[in-house]
Length: 85
Image (tube, rainbow, N blue to C red; front, side, top):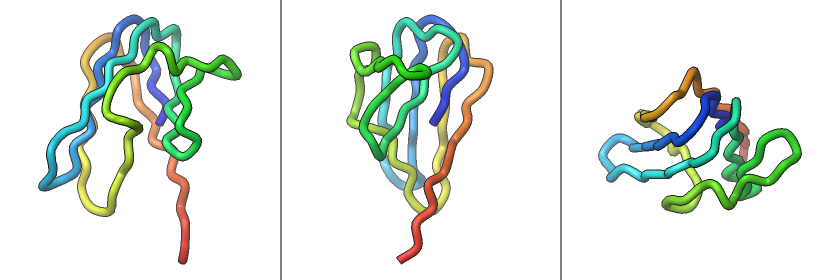
């Protein structure tokens, strides 16, 4: 997930029928990428794990998931990693 914005951003991810998970991201400068598979947050090649607090890492499950942000956010990109079994 890549979030474009600046300053303090709050991210809420809520799968349908489940409780919401909340993250607080501070000091965003243009964008931050949250990589749930690698369990890292970064901008370009700079780690930003120390600027993110919350419930683990966002995981999108099958079905409907609501993603909401508060703060100075221009856009969010969700970058899928499809897997077939």
